[in-house]
Amino acid sequence: MTAQRITKRVVDALRSNDREFTLWDDAVSGFGVRVRATGAKSYVVVYRAGAGRGAPVRRYTIAAVGKITPERARARAKVILGAVAHGHDPANQKTAERGTPTVAELADRFMADHVRAKRKAGTAEFYRDILDRIVKPAIGTTKADKLTRLQVGRLHSSLANTPFQANRVLAVVGSMYAFAGRAGVVPEGTNPARGIDKFKESRRERFLTGQEQERLGSAIREAETAGIPWTVDESRPNAKHVPKDKRFTRIGPYAAAALRLLLFTGCRLREILHLRWENVDLERGLGAVEVLLRIRLCVP
Image (spheres, rainbow, N blue to C red):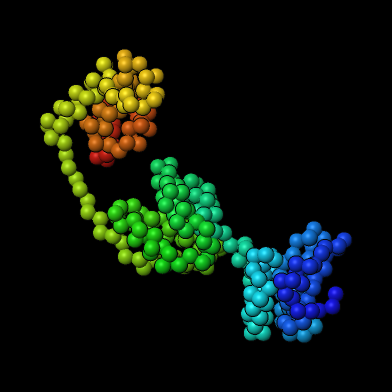
């Protein structure tokens, strides 16, 4: 097809036929509109990646017709051809970038290939929560190799009200990029979380008073026997569906035992919930409480 000035009127008038064709611009060499057999149209640039007739021919798709004007597409084509004149290969670079995962995709790979395989279940769940709830919504669509320290710093600053959580975000992102470097996803040593000042964390430790322990013990006894009553907002339309004689919560004996173990041993929640009978030494007369205390105190 003869080259002519590509304008909106010319582009709108183009109609598809049985095969793909390209209308070339008469002002910018290599810039044109590709029309597929389906009728889809897009602005393209064709160039040789290198010097001489033996250099490979590349086609770079600028954008679909309708997303940008012909004038903007022509200006973009000039920029691309200028990069080619300086020895670059924009089409090849674009293809390589498409293969780079986003931060969200990297996070999924990090969890599957590293965290779940090499970390404890509790740690893996902590990492998953940080990534799914905080990191992905904020920076998940960014290409992994394009994430900047500024972006991570802004995310960290947005969590100033929860300094412990904010600092854990930095740690998880740093660990994820260490994995990405070893896996070849990004250049090794890349870490957009490095150099960001952490928030000061103030640790608090307080023990229950004797009166508080007594009140807690009474509440546990009430919960496993009569049950803890709760109130219903009678103004809500479905309130009448809750019988008054059932408006209380009763916990089972195992839940009550777990609460007492937490109270008496100071163990972590998962240490209690994951406790099994094999942890109880029946031969030496050591019950679960003694076993947990010995575990925590490293007593044989």
